[in-house]
Amino acid sequence: MSPLRHLLDVNRAPLGTLAVFVVMMAVFFFADPRVFSQWTIYRSVLTTLPVALFLVVPLVFVVTAGEIDLSFPATMGFAAWSFALVVHAGLSPWLAVAAGLVTGTLLGFAIGSLVVRFNLSSLVATLGMGFVLRGVIQIANEGMPIALTSLGESGLRRIAAGFVLDVPAQALWGLGFVILAALLYNRHRFGIHVKFVGDNADSAREMGIDVDGVRIATFVLVGLGAALAGILSTLINYTWWPTAGEGYFLPVLASVFVGGTPTWGGVGTVAGGATGALIVAFIETGVVGAGLSGFYVQFFDGVVIILALIGHRWNQPRYR
Amino acid sequence: MAKPLVELRGIIKAFGRVRALDGVDLAIECGEVVGLVGDNGAGKSTLIKILAGVLPPSAGEILVRGQSVSAWDAARARAAGIETVFQDRALAVQQSVMHNIFMGRELAGRFGWLKLSEERREAERLMREVGFTSKDLSPRSIVGRLSGGERQGVSIARALYNRAALIVLDEPTAALSLIETAKVFGFVRQARSAGRSVLFVGHNIHHVHAIADRFVVLDRGRIALSASRGELPSAEALITFMERIAGRPAVAAPAGDRV
Image (cartoon, rainbow over all chains, first blue to last red; front, side, top):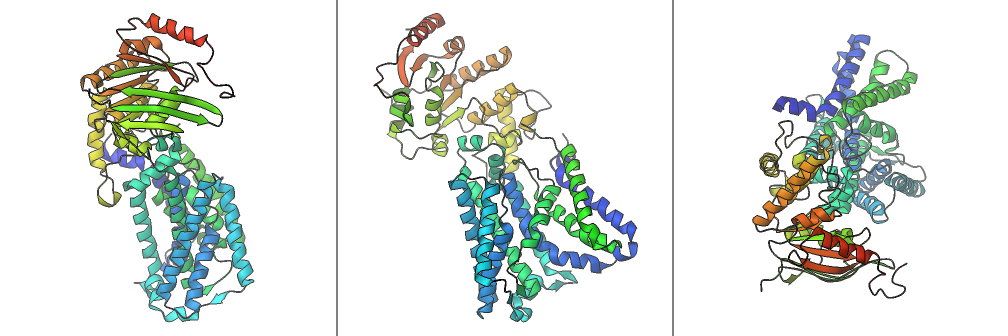
């Protein structure tokens, strides 16, 4: 097989996702060329998309390992809460970032350990943990947000969520995160171990791979990503809400699978997941931008998800 | 006398109240092919898993080159030079041949970044050594596209890497064609002449007898016989022995030992 053919073959899933994105954008463009030839619409998508990227990419690892983490919105809210508390106490926002990251990592470790040590179904256990964490947030805050106006002038805000030549800085951070994660997934021992564990955990164990450790590490990665997402979203809004993260639940899950990572584990694509997030982010903007009412958004979300899934099923054979 | 390559002393493995292995002593010398036979449930798979470090023994001692080992696990077993070709082949079918060959022992530089081109070169060499000749097969082929015999070849290629001292073959000829079986035999002879030890575990007594230097019969968790080829010159003699123990009650098993 020629190197080019091989490159196309191993990247068939992300390339398929990219094709879906290109076709979708072409349709939007023809529906309203005036709106879609302006930078404003892209800038607005690039402002919020990175938050989703920090969630989608780690989930690709978890799904590849044959697990799922449904607690990520609550972890995101929880880590952002610790960030907000430190900022609100008048301490350095950088210290707050550290607090948020530590909280997210510890939560990811706790959730992963729970699933692995007690040998639980990650689907149900993480659903439960999501409710527990969100419940704690609700009990402690009684629905009250935390306003963080001091963040407006902070250096952190300029660096994390300012503008570089009219491009939101977080888009660049998000891109960096995706590239680093893609390298970890495709070129690092950890990435191939995640694939072995999701492909055949018994074989991986027989070959001396620390299967439980790899599984827990994928949940830690989600915790870390959720913390980054939570901190970024709080920085964008200057406010932390007790519901922080809830709105990302279904769009983020959809992005992973629209991106071309199958549900059965062992294979997946980080670049595809990121493109999937791009697709999901543009559907809403595109439908409204094309002159349809907001009531059409969910319908088109569904249509695109189903079409992408059919495309991937046809594009990507499953080996047993 | 030279120390055995691997020695098991008094290995016991209990699952609840059932003793799958009930005090097994087994020594494998350097450059020796040992044929391990036994009926279903005799404890062959359990013994292999303990040797491979996949299952911890309930009691007993494992010695490698005369040294007692502690905290025995799959990674340590492989580091000690014991490679196992499991009956289910232990492959990840959605990954490439090359990734499977280096599973759990990836060639990586500092910070764990994979040396993919080096892995590819090494995989190509090993595939030739095992006798992959098809042009359609490359180190980047997905294992799920391969036939049963080819998958066996990948599993054997993996065991060959790093000059393993002992290669354990669990039912290596089960579900293989005549030609593929002959290939496995050729591989075992090659390993022996290279000074490696092989533990050949099988159901097919004719296959085991054709290849092993020494035969070990496992019966209900105990070694019932250990005999050299000179002592058991024909496969029929081995079969007769196994038929005789099959019709006999458990060897001095204390009451309440079996459920």
